[in-house]
Image 1: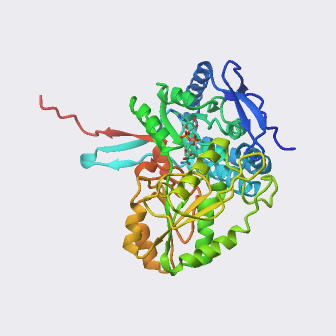
Image 2 (image 1 turned 90 degrees about the horizontal axis):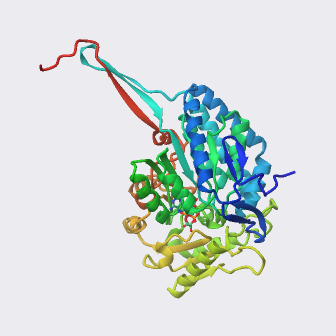
Image 3 (image 1 turned 120 degrees about the vertical axis):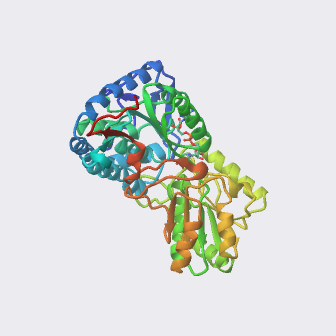
Length: 486
Ligand code: TXE
């Protein structure tokens, strides 16, 4: 039996489900059919207050444990998630509409990887000893920040909750997590599982709601850090609000990433990379390579091969393991995508295939490919966040580097070529935080993930995330006498 979609209650605070029906109702739709699968309530100020108090209390207790003990809890949570991967994946599919074929290998599993990885690191987080002249010395201590807030987007609800919670908790922090109002279900399961794994009550709390609840968390003086996954406009607002009290931030924001395919690329790999980087999760991935620059000499062959491969997309019931392409997350997101497709056509781009809304309940649109796209078109400049690939032609390396970098974003970039030197040279010149050579969109926990320019601040995953969830204290130790001038 899989999990019911209606949770026991809307929020998870101090190790238990809590409800406050005074909060505005929030309906959750199954994107594949549009049907209401759960009704929750937005967090009232009283719930936010309880969650922050619970986190503050738990944080002190948690930070007093050894890193090894903290790590054990995280690793146990990873094991529980692994054992329940099927049920968690079904819930993720219902929450987001993403096909089970994806959720069963990319969501709870990725969350479990983060918990296991940071659980393993927790015991080795230390400061250092620094010898100084005259027998003096110093040491550094790595300290937690305190209570951290996580604000999630709707595209990877389980993964985002775990990617934020795992390094935060490993470093001795507590967290209040607010999922996206569009996909509120999965983070509650992460909270339940952490409790089951031995986390003290209040260590990881989930409160529901939209921007107003996120803003209340961001500005609360009990909060030391805010980590957001979302859009650039929201990122600017949250960053500015956090700055008022000099809070730490991690910003994982949007992108319009370039994927550069040279004439010597393995064409099937390049087509595969472009498919992964545009149509996985129905294109709702921040790091997608949505500006596909294809060398003019292979452009037509590339488009033919792509059209052939797209015939293989199985669009249907997301819970059927054979389905490889699901609906958009919401009617609103579908309409955004449709409006961009209309803009692309209006601007003179050639719609090679797809882009049609399917005549069925739910939020379905077929994968779209535009060719003859030019840099100035709106579809080549703005993040669409849907299954819309823009193919642009180029003639030489310097030209494509300049054009690829001519964007305010800098999340990801990919290069397909068989020329070893060119591959590394071009990657080095691209302004992006997460790059791929002859691949696209791999995000193992061992690698730092994050953007440059408007795509964000800070890094998630890898040892780099530790720097963003802890602070250093340095202690000077004088072994001799203190010599003062008077
Ligand atoms: O993101 P939002 P949404 C992009 C994508 C998409 C757009 C909107 O372009 O079309 O964002 O998606 C909370 N203070 N990405 O609506 O609005 C909000 O409740 C504090 C890129 O999901 O940025 C949610 O929990 N919090 C992205 C979170 O911030 C606030 C993945 C993100 O909301 C707030 C998904 C405020 N003032 C969408 N306002 C990626 N980069 O991965 C909103 N929130």
